[in-house]
Image (tube, rainbow, N blue to C red; front, side):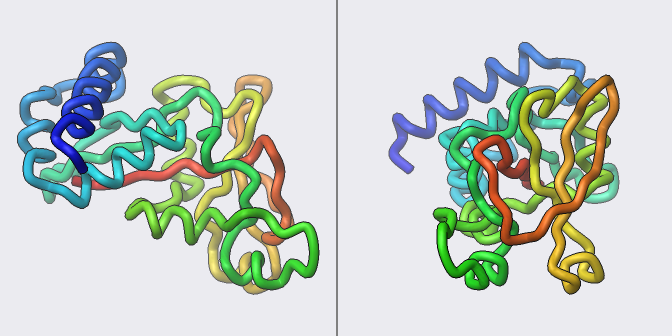
Length: 181
């Protein structure tokens, strides 16, 4: 990442951090930036989260490890990650009308993880996310082995978890990711 790109990314993330203090009470930006300084891999992952519309922000700190948790906090599922099936197996199984890729593989390429259901519900404590879209979430192996995958959204003031064939994809469904630094 070029120094100018790094500066733009950090400036954007600092503004978001300062605007949404309810997401990270008791955490100072200087501490977060100190953790990011020199961590080229994390900065690249955060840049990709930002560039794909995720609006990453700090949503907590692991008390045991001290690691900060960044999560996609865009109001709707990240626009640059939509129309993806769930994983490579699902993508390979499609015979026609294949999507551009899969959520699991894109997350891995970005160096982030898909939220699981519990993390998705926890994110909703900080706002109302996916009121018009939906997001694939990490799916338990027993569900995936039967051909399904899980996704979540927020409607009527509630978080809902649904299932779909892992091969499906929709223009309004993406995935939300997280990263610990």
